[in-house]
Image (cartoon, rainbow, N blue to C red; front, top):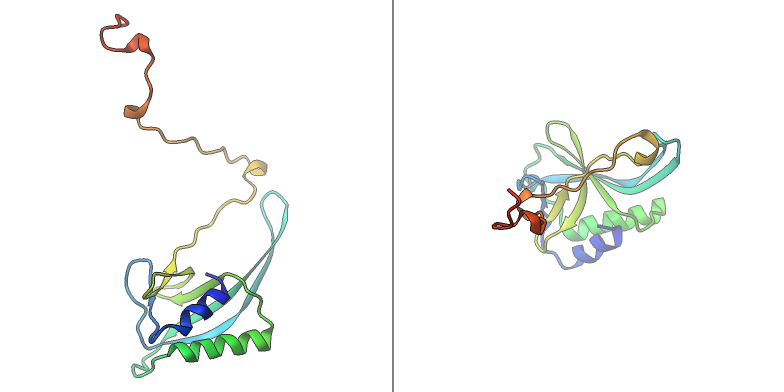
Amino acid sequence: MKLSQIKRTLVDLESIAFQLPNGELVPRHFHVTEVGMITKNFIDCGGTLRNEEVINFQLWSANDYDHRIHPEKLLHIIELSEKTLGLPDLDIEVEYQGETIGKYGLDFDGTNFLLTTKATDCLAKENCGVPASKPKVKLSELQTAECCAPGSGCC
């Protein structure tokens, strides 16, 4: 989800809920403690220089159980961040601490914001010797030659 998409979504909401990949909700008394941009400059294992940028939201839950962030408040925080930091319309990454700090993508299902799983990947498979994946095929779906058809006399 891009920054422009969450802004459009927040306009129509009465409350905000974030759902973890396991289906649990982030406690409703969460705080959005940071909105910013993260820039990652790196070299992949094939020697290619790369640059990635994402908008980062950090969610935090404390023992402030009466706290509830409303959609208009989060929209105000986002707009202030855009103005102050000059944020572009990039994909959003959400940080949330469960047992450790997790980084998630963001989506919306019509009711809740969904924290989606992210995965690592080799960006230079052709340069570092990782073999291409072979397609998985079910033996029951293989086409057999006519010579092995029942009654063909091949067996």
